[in-house]
Length: 493
Image (tube, rainbow, N blue to C red; front, top):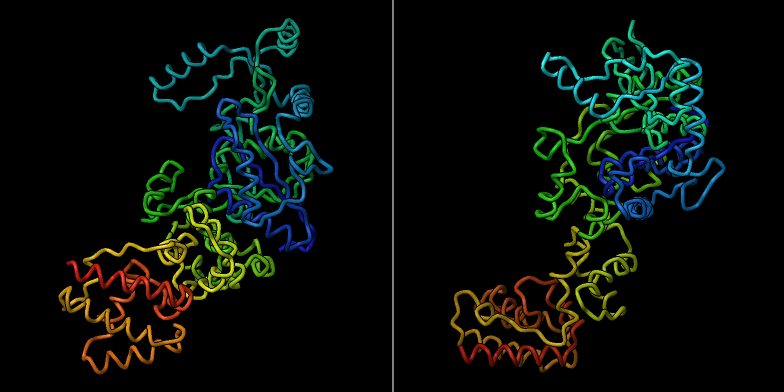
């Protein structure tokens, strides 16, 4: 664990929605920055214009802020090393590209897409790994410069070594060795003047003084290219870390973004915005993802501040982590119960309002203690407590009849219960429970029969928060009105 302040970046591409993998990368970067008193940067790598998705950048920024991962520098707040969007840094990339060409580490390539496709097909027929055949690598540099000056369409490729080995250290995996004969000469500057990720990320990391590159394992395949670019330019290497992959809940195979739809149909998702809309809270989501790749107890309950205090990059593991939605539910429910009544009321209120309820704040504060222990997600408040905000309820007649009793017998039970409630000056938990339980004992009925009839009559549903506390919130006159209506329904059955 470094004691020096680090500079780390979360550098997503605005080509889609914010995925759990990206959220975990951002979280680890944030924790390391805060743990060392360093700087957490958001950089938008938007050079892939073909895959650019309108609104994706805003979703990324909104997702980070919802999670509580406030960045210190970024495209919307600026900073000393901006701009923080790669499309706004073209001159910088072109400058370093010229440096690589002039030093012999890169070259201009004039091959057309038709020629490259023909070469690829020939290589496949020969059962060779498709790669660039080096035609323009062998061009005389002066001739290449003349063709560029004449305006001929071209790209720039990085000249990878073809002999010997490349070695680099990943903090989580140790030293990794590649045979250079396996390398391809990748494009680092496209014909439109925009760089590819390979060059742009390395240039930005250098110019933004990034000390630790924490990113997904999908970049391991191009790790040697990045290393060779940094070394060709004579720059100091950052600490490299490639995080573990996410596996499907079954533990078999990598969890892909395409499978999010299946998860969503089951009430879960691998996208941050979906989780927010499904009623998950940032504390629960963060606690869940922080443990997928961190070598501490998998049931540790932590808030963000506690994560900062405990975080150590040396405890991250490269072992794949299976996405376990049951654990997400566990952590989310746990963190919901750690919220104050006021905090939880404020977070559930938008879900009630979105469902069309006119929410009375004072009533909501009385409701929350009754439902808090039952909530796994915030939207669980709707089936448990939405009925509180109905002017009337419409019980299903069949549900009013108690098990083992006919509708007529159930009506008689409801009538006697109503008489007891009418005799009370107010209907409170303390005032109502004793007389009703005495009635149950004297009648030989079960609590489930009597309270079940009252529950459906008052709430309109078979499952609700504690009955007596609920009746107290609803109020005496409304309770009596609903029980009388239930009696009428039962008498007509």
